[in-house]
Amino acid sequence: MKILVTVKEVATVEDEFEIEGTAIADQYLGADLNEWDDYAIEEAVQLQEAGVADEVVTVTIGPEECEQTIRQALAKGADRAVRVWDDSLEGVDLLDVGAKTELLSAVIEEEDPDLVLTGVQAGDDSFGATGVSVAENLGYQWGAVVNHLEHGFDDDAASVRRELEGGVEELTEIELPAVLTIQTGINEPRYASLRGIRQAQRKELDVKALADIGVDESAIDADLELTDMYEPESESDVTTWEGSAEETAGELAELLRDKGVAQ
Amino acid sequence: MTDILAVTDHRRGELRDVSYEIITAGRQLANETGGDLHLAVISGTVDEFAEKLNREGVDAIHTVDYGEEFNHDVYTQAITQLYDELAPQYVLAPNSVNGLDYAPAVATRLDLPIVTDTIDLATDGETLIATREMYGGKVETTTELEGSAVATIRSAEWPQTEGTGDAAIEAFDAAIDEDAIGSTVNGFEEVGGGDVDISEADVLVSVGRGIEEEDNLPLIEELADALGATLSSSRPIVDNGWLPKNRQVGQSGKVVTPDVYIAIGISGAVQHVAGMKGSDTIVAINTDPNAPIMDIADYAIVDDLFDIVPALTEEFQ
Ligand SMILES: Cc1cc2nc3c(=O)[nH]c(=O)nc-3n(C[C@H](O)[C@H](O)[C@H](O)COP(=O)(O)OP(=O)(O)OC[C@H]3O[C@@H](n4cnc5c(N)ncnc54)[C@H](O)[C@@H]3O)c2cc1C
Image 1 (cartoon, rainbow over the protein chains, first blue to last red):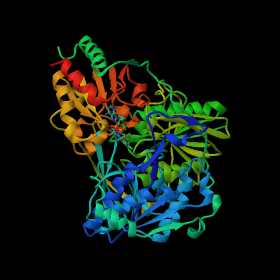
Image 2 (image 1 turned 90 degrees about the vertical axis):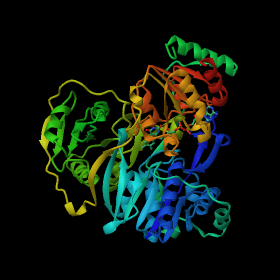
Image 3 (image 1 turned 120 degrees about the horizontal axis):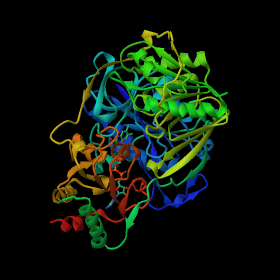
Image 4 (image 1 turned 90 degrees about the horizontal axis):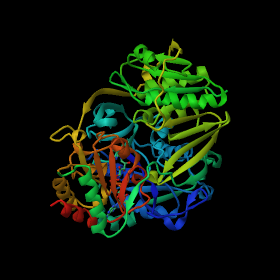
């Protein structure tokens, strides 16, 4: 079985930051492997270690700088990586679900995997929709918010649990090929070993432009336009205590005693 | 005229609250241009559901009597057929786990853009302006799109519509292609039972990823002990296996309503807040003055938990 994992480098924001127009100013941004994708990579690598998967390929939409993050996935055990980028993507503010679907679908079609694992959502734009959209676009089956996957794959089907709200899980059988969006907690993502990191440097990382995957530039014209960004208004009037740890802890202790806690 | 098709949510025989919230969101959008609000209720005891959903401002309710429980293939087929029949401007769906299992497929099949997890929506009939969060709630954004679209709404952002309505309730004869159903739901299981019921606690000391390592947990346990409080947590603590699932507060964990909720090293992501915003008094201990938890906290200490927690524990020993 061949597994493809979508891997995204997400932008992280420092505690204090400034907004410039419709973006957070560059100097307050960091980059990290999307938390949910980390679990998706781990699940794929475990399937490979269990002898279920023959190959694990990652696909990323992103500029050269995100190769650091892709190497992390390779260091954890993915076999090779595909990165899609193009000058035409350079100036895009917000790559929407439709555009991501076009790009990822083109790569997936070429790779023809049996199983695609994506994160439930990306920690930065948090659309939470790309995996299911890709599945529909390709005519694959799918399951969203999967927090358990049986490794048996009897009758060419994935036996999964979908994590619903309020501590309820749904037990579902999904025919292959399928896209599963992976929820945190499904496994324990490993840290890349030193050996893994060394090996990752030698693994294949293919860079593809839009033309290479047969996608027309018009396909990435986003339907959604980001028009404003601001800090949310606070709903409560929070009382913030100031001072040394002893002082603020003392204030809180007083409040708690007032509320009858620990008495 | 902006007609709206809003899809309702139910599970194991019960309509979920978001079904009444989506009526409010849909009515509001339809009102902006004088359009109609259509509801779709798919699978389960649809007639019974339709009676309950017949609230103020609903123009029509379309029931699709097929199967008992949610199946995304059935939903996708039924909604796309309803769309073809009714030609609404916008399709609204809940941003629930099930909504996220069909709404993107509906959008893709209909070749429409999708905007998810919206917290506000407005339209002039041509442009949809959607408000949503990015970066885990650190910023809010508005996004605009032209023409028809699918939008999912965050739960508890719109009030529930009350009052009885006089909607036309119509059975919609969706042609469900069974060969195109690629997944089967075989059942449900409740998880996270066990020794402690955090939803019963009066005082919760709740710990998040700010604690960094499992070895640091005793620091929080000592505080909980000193306060006679119950220990709960955000999701990453449970994902890491440091605490059992029955301690998780949030959308996929437990809803809690204690007198006092002390959030220590918890950012206050929407899925966490969904589980604890009903607490009487919320106290946040966090190094980040802009963490979303500050928006709902009553009291806050912006400082390192490794300094504050021991000092607080000492106060009670
Ligand atoms: C479908 C779905 C369902 C989910 N269900 C749930 C759910 O039920 N419950 C839940 O909690 N989450 C849930 N999540 C996850 C949620 O989105 C967040 O990822 C999670 O709540 C973050 O947990 P956290 O606040 O502990 O961690 P983080 O977001 O990483 O926040 C850690 C906080 O600690 C602070 N901090 C760091 N160091 C210190 C220090 N030394 N002193 C003081 N403060 C410090 C930081 O400033 C930060 O604010 C769900 C997500 C999805 C997609």
